[in-house]
Amino acid sequence: MKLVTYQNQNKTALGILLSDKVYNLSELSQRRGKTVLPDNMRDFLTGEQLMMDAAMELNQWLSDGNADADGLSVANVNLLAPVPNPTSCRDGYAFRQHVEAARRNRRVEMIPEFDQYPIFYFTNHNAIQGPGDIFCMPDHFEQLDFELEAAIVIGRKGINVKAKDADSYIAGYMIMNDMSARKLQMEEMKLNLTLQKEKISLLLLVRI
Image 1 (tube, rainbow, N blue to C red):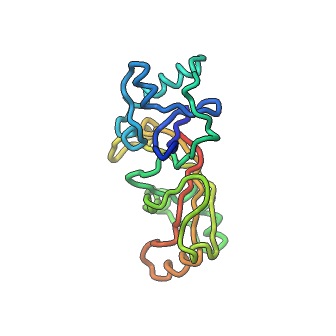
Image 2: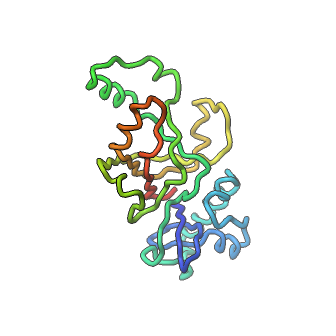
Image 3: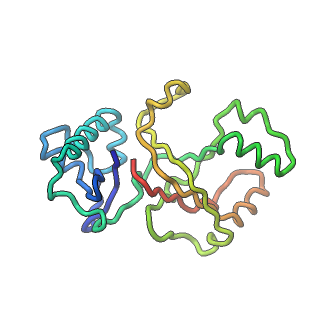
């Protein structure tokens, strides 16, 4: 199932993308007499498994040949970031082989703490942008860098979740383009505090 946040005639809504057509999730659930689904991704994710099960049922119904003319051509809508306003966004510190190689290139030893804690930083969840042009301060484009990454969308509340249970908290996956203003980053890291301005945008390009 592919869920998208899209804009049509200045209205933002949540939809199912199927065969190059977008179906409004809330309207479709009402017509089918099923659990009425929210028209935005944040409320949808807040509903956890109940919302997800209802959406998957509708997606299966469409896939079984019941798709009709109510779907909008994806070419005629404006796709936004699938999760345009998350409550939080965290960026994990790569995988072990990458960290080892990077430290080896800098002629420093691998630190044992890497295997003891989930290493991440809080990135700016208000800087997320969808497909299209990037809007930011002009100096952010100096030494602009980007990294193609996989993004995981969390769909359940949890605390101190055990590794063996982690998969059950995942609502979906997306492709994320993590963009960094390296010039600003190098300046800020000299202060030995934390990253502030250089994470200018996260382009979430594919839907959950």
